[in-house]
Image 1 (cartoon, protein in one colour):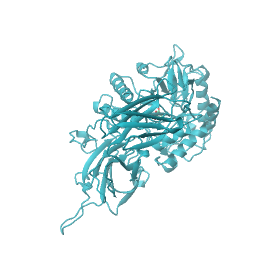
Image 2 (cartoon, rainbow, N blue to C red):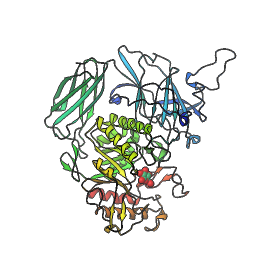
Image 3 (cartoon, rainbow, N blue to C red):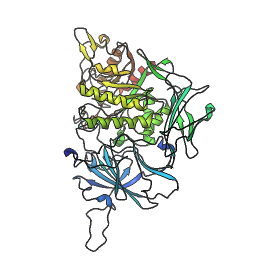
Image 4 (cartoon, rainbow, N blue to C red):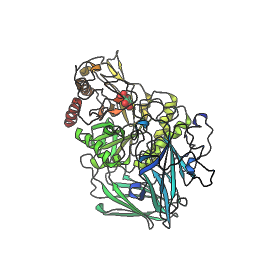
Length: 594
Ligand code: GCB
């Protein structure tokens, strides 16, 4: 990661907008590495007027002479948990959008021949990082990891690490000015100091050959090693031990056949222990193998057509009114999806933390992962496009070895235009430049009822660029029914598989009322709406999956109704307190039948 260059962007001056950093490489499988956790209580300063950088508070100076004084100190002030959002930690920070400084000390006993990296799972939304008074890097994008090499910069003891975090919404950001979820700020995911040998296994991509049930393809990239270095892959359970040497770019490529491979599937989420090693380094993790492809209107997993029983959730624990960040949080979210009978999760609307992704894979959920290209994105802005490209690459780099990952999502609810098309095409090329094995999907909300043809139709030529087409359609909520659900026939994206990626309506748990009055916000209305939609789904010939919106009620500043919403989007099948609404049972029955 390069250090920041000076910026001359009027809007950005007071914000933490980063300069162009170029897509950075990420160390594969940080959780499988030797790490020192930097999670815990950090000192914090709320910097509402963005004065901290000007006053260089990251130097953490202390008065020495009699006339010295500094109008700040990181000691004896606010303390915030890392990882976590700041909004849920203090009532005063609930709505805060601006800058907060985080700081902590740490020791890092010197290890000869080791390289060290500071790794952040995510910081929302942008940040600059300062180590021992020096700015060492920056990052923009609240949901993807980044790392900064600190070899030679960390001291054996008494390091002072400061992170300037800012979550101000801007028109050029991703997401941009308005989005239907809480704008949590903070160091929201794990922070660690990663130690690796000076010549180390930086990255690998190990997967089943695209159209083969028994050929494993692997690319392994070393950093700091001379070309011609031997790399070994071992999969003990499959009795595999293969070696290749690196080329000029430090990459070793292998393809080999295996016998008696149990392929991963939601019903049997088999993972194998895989060990990658060189004479200097060794890393291991659990990897599954499966084939996924599209055949005409079918989505085919391991050779058999599949119906996706999906659900979405935000990376939020409603009871805590804060971001989910731990393994325990992942257990809570995913257990409720399991109880519903799902075989897939659409991780809305941004890459969620690795605890969720890794546990989902173990539990047998296929995954759809996307970056927050959520309405209102400035598609004509080249800088925004570059940022989105970096973001999507960081997502793909992090999760490409997770066989559960089935879909890379490039957009949610966008309007056709030349600028949008070019932007989304670029994102697809970014995904494919790293991984051409997943299916590319985008969610559209342009389906409309054609009165002449008496059919639901959509006209967006971009669907041709996608493997699978997804539609968000809120029949019975945002859109009144133009005819009865049993007559609501679709002619959308024929020839390709179609997923209903969102449908639903709001209900306040425990509120009862007429099943035909939307404004009753009643469980009865929501349940009837589900029944109608499930009926309509029978009339979508290329329907290969559904994903109701959404598993849990979630917090959203969009939602102003004082009694029915009070700052919550109430489309959850489960309430903020964890109670299942009537519609949950309908959905459960539907999934049990499919
Ligand atoms: C949508 C969005 C989703 C919203 C949802 C709603 O179409 O994709 O992010 O939360 O509608 O509840 O309005």
